[in-house]
Image (cartoon, rainbow, N blue to C red):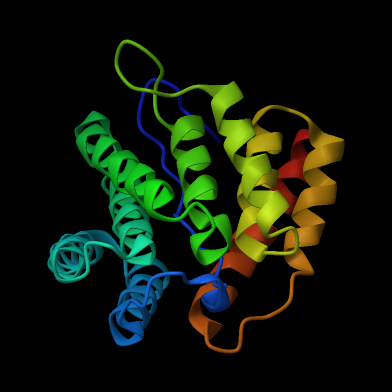
Length: 215
């Protein structure tokens, strides 16, 4: 499931806790970025998907210039770039992963609680997925530390549980992985996120199926 010598980035995530926004970002910009991300990530594939991701990266850059103090926008820049890197694949995606890391760290500096700690989950996924030194910045201990920090802020979230569950699956901690993935499967639905929820539930089912084969 995980290739340490290449970049294998999972779809990036967000917590969806709008009430935690400390910066008055333009919600129309946030809504557009998250809805378009779900469409591109779950409803497109191949060259069309890569082209759409590249365009979405550009859009997120424009919005971040418009709203440089919004931690939420910086989170979304990191989410989009990391997901694009995962779709692009190969060592050529490492540059995107490094850019995403900077964007997410910027969001943490602005507000570590933004979007329910979503930056920590995305950062954890990056640390888990990219190669380690000297090629990349991957580090399993840091990955788990960040994912657990995200879970303290959003313990019932579908994304925080899914990504930690896949981390545990990769680490062959199967009993723990099953528990966390089932929590993800039973996470509360997000009425404003039907496309994202549907796509994530498919990924959870695939992870549980893989877990069954590995045991």
